[in-house]
Length: 114
Length: 122
Picture: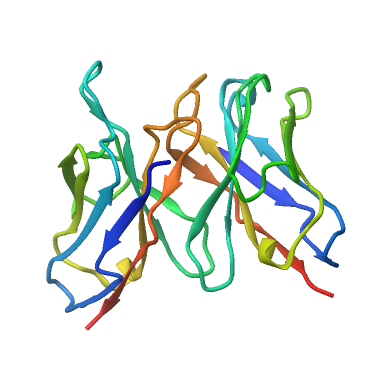
């Protein structure tokens, strides 16, 4: 089974500052046959369903603000919020789908305002 | 617009059964796999099960294998999760979610329902 880890567990960032979340998989989620990383990022606000932000490791879902970006390959990935807004307070999860149909989520990173 | 609406959540005693439903609309239901994902109180997201677009393939997390059964009725645009031998640790909000790739085997979830709460307690 592919195990996902995230760091930090939580972080507090001032409004307008950068927030960076890391995600690591226990094995590579990169398929060389199609040159794709099978990794997604979600935002989960309290009382709401999760929202897809990023898929294929770096492709922003339609409607997601440009301040959200993601990068990485193989086993190490990063989600960056370039200028934190109040509405970005949430828990952020990475998810691998390399072992499709069995998918796994990371433990989550809580983002708050400092 | 794409909509997923879960129902069936309730308070049940340990060892009892419950069936959740996920009614979908706004897209070609028979073209997408559907996932169930849960969140226990104070915990993170846990993937539970997936059913392929045509119902021919079903897969489960180890934590529910042998106790939960996923099914779908493409004529009713509905997915079901039959939960048997429920345990207190199954207490969670259960979300159904649409897989992002048409006729794919399981990938990211690009649409989610609002969730339904299942509480297992004596």
